[in-house]
Image 1: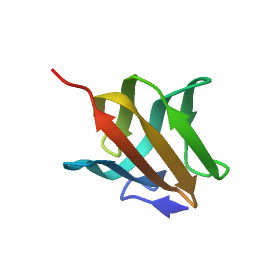
Image 2: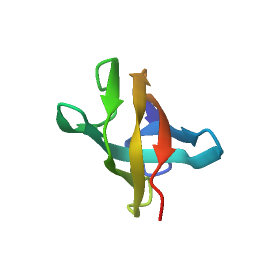
Image 3: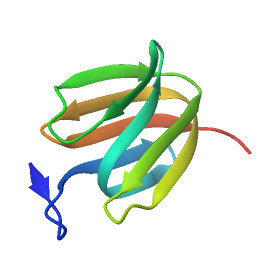
Length: 92
């Protein structure tokens, strides 16, 4: 597991759209709007690939700041504390 300066295990997170990078950085946890319901990824999570529905991705960064990203739909892949989400961003 990756550990930050605080010693807590962290995730490496990328949220990408066809237009570019929405988020790239380290996080303590990430919550996704899965098609079967919301789920949270923590360090050490089992490998998973999941479809996402319209909703909000909530990222709690290593410093404790929470970011919220609105999406229309997408997919997420989790493996070895690396989280990669490919999404369509929600329109304003």
